[in-house]
Length: 195
Ligand code: SAM
Image (cartoon, rainbow, N blue to C red; front, side, top):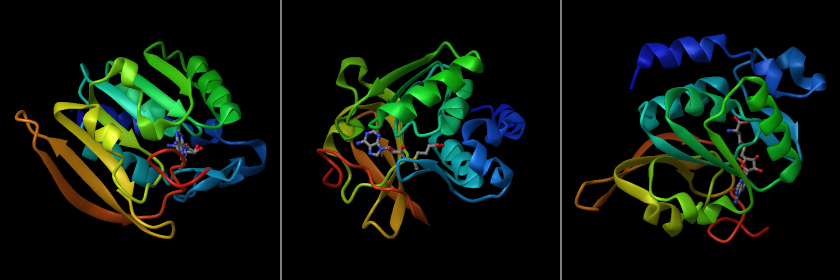
């Protein structure tokens, strides 16, 4: 991965562009902020750290679960070939799409629905980024990860989770590493918390 490119793009991204007028004055605080519908734009330093962990390459096909504001999506799209992003809340998905089109991204594919079951049609994915927390690792996402692939996903109870790095070896073996403690909103859906 081109670390310098990631760092430079991250620093150039105006976070206030991704949030509502009422929150813009807080845009430079390194903390999650509300984006409506009980959801949040993630803490910027964590978005950067999770992108580093994922190690997208310029030829990577990436699946992102939880488009939210589109801030993380922008970083992923800058660093990889294609991003398939799934959001369950239609209004958030539409706002994010508008923003990302304004930024001239043409390598992002959008879906409204339950991302806990992945996006089978375009699988397998070289990288999977999950930005909402499930109680258990969703099997379908593991199935849709390509061999040699990496997935970053918060797993655990609603109040605190372990941020997991999942890797799939060329022989298909799954390795799991805990890299941090985090707090994310719930991943809702078939392989997440009840709607
Ligand atoms: N990365 C986003 C950003 O930078 O704005 C933050 C995403 S927010 C922490 C998590 C998002 O996951 C919310 O927008 C929420 O609606 C979405 N979400 C929760 N469960 C989902 C599911 N099953 N499928 C798709 N999106 C889901």
